[in-house]
Image 1 (tube, helix red, strand yellow):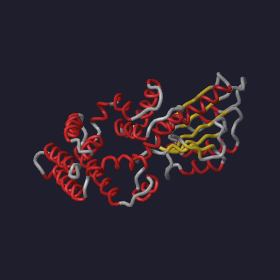
Image 2: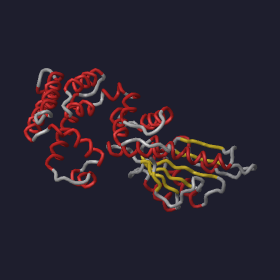
Image 3: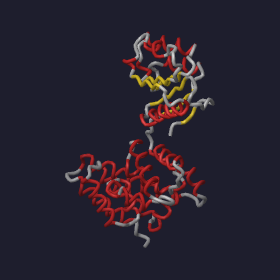
Image 4: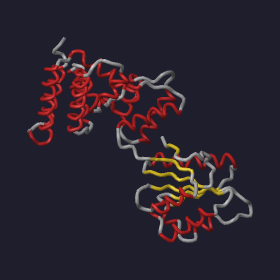
Length: 328
């Protein structure tokens, strides 16, 4: 979720600066300010403007004194795209903000329009960070924070299953969390996520990998066929298989210890240490080597080295599942 970067946490501060490229977080930053303003004055006037709507002189008109002394929120989106003359107007306003008016600047960050960004910070803006989530771990943190914000608990496995099922769209993830919280009582676990998002979960490359490394060949093949039928790229499946087998190899060769200690050593979250420990029970060093070779061959096959990518994946899945049972 969006994070504060300024000790001034008052949404009604004269200036709020939302920096980043994650649309959901930017919209939430705006909604928080508007909600606070309307709580203070239900008749608050909200102006939400794109850069082309804020021409030189427009800000002066919007912030001119009113006979009715009404509260106003002026939102400027993509502030980095404002014209040079308009940026001068905004900087001049920052030197003498008007009482009862809250200016919200949404800025992508980066070099473009950096002068305005620096001026807003120098003016003591309340800053909200809205970074684009590009890593799976960041999306997982987002899902956990969504459950916490709604006052509900979800198991680490449930949060991971939701990310695997929904993907990278934060709006969809937030919507899924809201739906689960509204419909389900008690702690939300992996089984609940599976019931709600079974079609999407089955299409996940990680579901294929999990079933394969657990030695459940039939279920892995079923998940694989569903994945391919719903458009999951074969290369994502071989990548997930490789990650699953490597995780088992890394954990099997690591010294024993607490999940938190192993997590730091191996670069895995603690909940994954527990899951991999359960998955690795039938594995041997020879099994890991066999599985890695099979996955490498499948990866070459789906990247143009073979005539039938689907067959290459099926062969790899079966080989991995068998390798998972060498010790059993």
